[in-house]
Length: 264
Length: 270
Image (cartoon, rainbow over all chains, first blue to last red; front, side):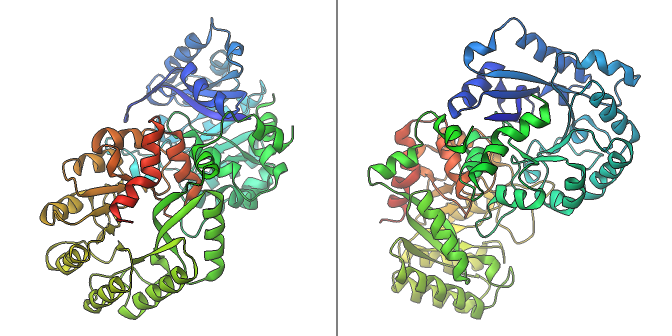
């Protein structure tokens, strides 16, 4: 199984700290063989690249295959903290994908520069993750009130720009509210934008969250991401394992779709 | 690789499955049934999947048409619960009450005499303060049953009107020390660290760990702050997340078993 998004480093608002080994130790017993990880500090440091460097430093010099898993690195990137798009090739060396997190890095998702980054990242063949929310919206820490929102209109504008400028780019929206995804389901399907199972914000009569996502965009565009160590991995995993979708669909979600998205 | 191949790579069986093999089931203290029987059938299916042996059920507040439902709607909901409990031995009835309807108190007393197991989920028509709370709390104490109260655990960006907060729960518990109060779904959204700390010193408050929030550490923190005996398993109808929460927690298995069933049996005197 493949986990498309985990975190290492320190989350600033709760006692959540983890190194790569900690994340591996949580996920390997569940049967994960490929783990993609991003450093929290690449979202929260003003100079995001310091977080990326921390991740690289931790990763290098260890043979992670000894742990029975492959660890892949994700780079955080703030499009407005670099002087030119050309810089990103140096930044992204050694990383498997780029993560843009408008809420945490503080920028507007529908800015033209974001699209330029998506295009440039795809040029060296790196997919782009647009990251939504670390936490349930209702528990966001009072210390931060961001200027930027990730409302339906913002995401829609981004998808329209994507369609115009680089419709074949590999893009995933990770950890977005169901309401946002369902409002944009058509656009997501047409552009083959991937979505994931980590968020949970539909309540009421026994919703099968993963089935609802599959019904929304089809079983080929849903990938598994747990956000370990922020979440209990089994809470996310059981949603997929016990979903009333077909076995084939589960296999795609837990493995094959992520392979395609990351180009493994 | 086939789906079976993926599943076989999971190391170890989850505790809820091992309990099932030993004939031991889980007790869910907070779950809602519906006026629609098809939804109830689906609910019972998930209860089977996740080894729920006993469930304390109340009518879904969203089936009552309003956050401030009429006495007639409340009565209709409770009648449905009674009907389902008679037909399904796994279910135990909880009485939905709108504290703003004076007739609901009489109805609650009647249902308690008929064997309902508790009061709640007291939902979002009003905050339980002063006289509004008094009759309800007296009833819970007189009939020696727990009262399950919907609580919002400090929401971003602000609390909602008519919704109980952890400070309301603390005040109630202090005023009515003989009442057994279940503060609903500490993992249902909001600042759960705040909520746990606010009720730390009121030993007649129990927390249920149902709801949608998947944050790691919440069970461990609840055990650290409240002790293992004040935490009750609940789904609030979201079984995969709720079971996954307990299964993932880094606490001893005997603590998990207390959460899964033993604490509930003590609180409900069952």
